[in-house]
Length: 313
Image 1 (tube, rainbow, N blue to C red):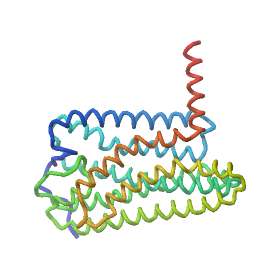
Image 2: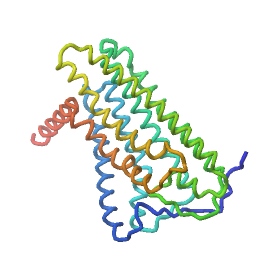
Image 3: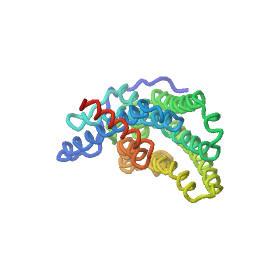
Image 4: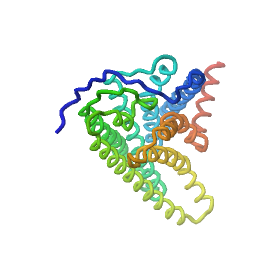
């Protein structure tokens, strides 16, 4: 078994999204705006759910945890990326490993959490009378903790593998954050096992979450078909539209990045995909779950009315 890392590389140079100096300031402003919208939208969703008792249901419990996960995993790398637009893009070896670890934790957790939300929608639609009995607070907390445990196991596996590799140069990472695939390409020692574990773990997690989502929605469709009224079917399916949109965007971009053989891996394509699932999706999720959600709109209007009455009295 290989020993722990005895690397000669003390820091990595991140190429970033582009090496064009004329684009650094515009990109800094753009991604600062995106990050601020992400923070405001997701914290706003958490606070809205917390302050409104009608939203204290399993569905919104999962949604608040999804918002918290989006905040965490975008914060893992976004501030560092923004700083790197303004000065040399350097990161220490241990800083790079830590960033890779926490990113893997949260991106895996989000994927599993989305599959748990699909199961929650299935129980709510297919078994509405037993929904509160099945989806108790204890069960919901256990499902969220299981999502984080899956993220922790996945991250620890790849991080420990990274620490056993030798990095003796070059130290240029062709990415805007310390992701695992570009780091593996810089290793001086054999990284074949790391690449294999990355493919296996990514594939297993993707397959598990895909099966849970697909089985849940197949049974949801069957349950909706049993509803006699067209209005009832429309209302039942409308509760799933937001989740389906979030699932498609997230799983599509992450699967494109990681579930592919190393021989076909393109760092440039992965950069574009990574921008989407690390910056755009966390920003869009609060919008996706609020724009088509009457409960969230009602809660937001209620808080707005209370705030206005408090302000003008």
